[in-house]
Length: 284
Ligand code: PXL
Image 1 (cartoon, rainbow, N blue to C red):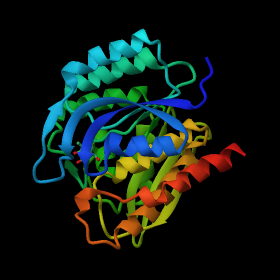
Image 2: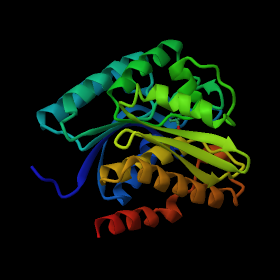
Image 3: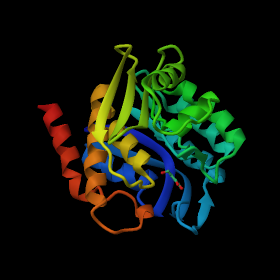
């Protein structure tokens, strides 16, 4: 059956406050003409970067939820996974990939595990081990440097890594060129760079953006959601990563003009029309 728009399953948590996860993927994908089908991994009042939060794991309910999708015979153009709450969830996501992937599906795994050299408080060593297996299913992964080092058991050396080390991380994560890898957050003076290894061309490309000296939780989620929307619309991984990094640069620079709590995240809403324009232009 041909659908009027492409469909993407988003496996991520729902945080009611603090722009991250499904709260970011939903508006971004809708703006990009993609139907966002959410599979929540947990429900939080706000993300874990705030000093307090309510956290309700969805692990025990995910299988029943997924079973209903099976009965509906759903399959997706893209399956996009992000924040996972426990080891069991990683197994659930693995089965989801197996059950809902078709020949035409693209699997994007954002291995959300940590940032700035630190693993998130909800993450365990065992989960890191399991994430190594989950990325084997992915066509595209979008780690930051911390996550790349955890996945490869490499010592974290900061964000200002040299080109040779960045390429080594990306190549090793590609499993000898079998998947596309988008490594985010490489700092080079006043710039922030993204290194893309694209499976289809087997080429590396650096993308350079102006760095804003402010960090916002959920930046990786915004980046990966825009990339997912573009790839779902048929963009190359390189063009999708360019769009995502330019969008993050512009929205971060805007947000930094305000004196808000950084936990509240990037105020991308005033710019969302630019994502609609990208899709319109791509279709012409
Ligand atoms: O943006 C990553 C993320 C996603 N989901 C939850 C988080 C975080 C980072 O802190 O706490 C619940």
